[in-house]
Amino acid sequence: MVILRAHGDGSIFADHREGRQPCLMGLHGWGRKRSDLGLILDASGHRSVAPDLPGFGASSDPGSAWGAEGYASVLAERVAPDCDPPFVVVGHSFGGRVAVCLAANYPDLVCGLVLLGVPLLRGDTSPKPAKSYRFIRAAARVGLVSGERLESARQRFGSEDYRAASGVMRDVLVRVVNESYQDELGRVQCPVALVWGVEDRIVPSQVADRAAAHIQRLVSLNFVDGVGHDVHLAVPETVVEAVSSVVAASK
Image 1 (cartoon, helix red, strand yellow):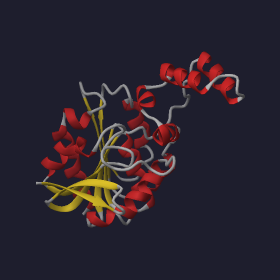
Image 2: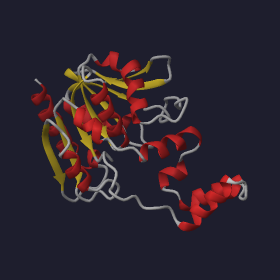
Image 3: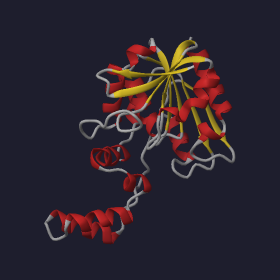
């Protein structure tokens, strides 16, 4: 049975499931909500907590443009006490960014990580925005282009996530896509499993290969053929196996 509960000051809502220890914390990707990892959490048989991250689902927007570290801090303060620490964190994409910061900064809370298609490291070179967009953006900074024309350019040239975001959540997105977690990965002390779709076009499998070199206790690195970014939806049984391997390694 899934029970919805409010956390902290009522700004964060999370699904709770009963089961065996250790508890799992499921962290969804950008633009998703707490139910996104439900297949894994149900099948695992573990007690679990799956919050709507601030700005998504039923949870309130953050008060400012947090990075992944800010999200981790809020979870540590408001949600973690109800997870009976230490717990294993299962994070997809954006949720995995937060999971790594949570494990690195609060090692007493996290006893394992399962990371799914997470943009952990930035590429050696980041593609520049279109030249015409850069011109409009520069002109807007000096008052030569209206806010309406700048927003029109953002809608034309921005990513799907960027176009869908607004207000503080757009600022959050801009901040996190420019973050890299090499230092945090090096500080993670718990066992870690990586599960990636070979056909992931959002976070290519090369990212997992590069990230693995920075992980102290890598339990497994599993590339799944014929699967894209939503590996948790395509092959939940593979993710559940990764959870079991991390739980075993954490004992």
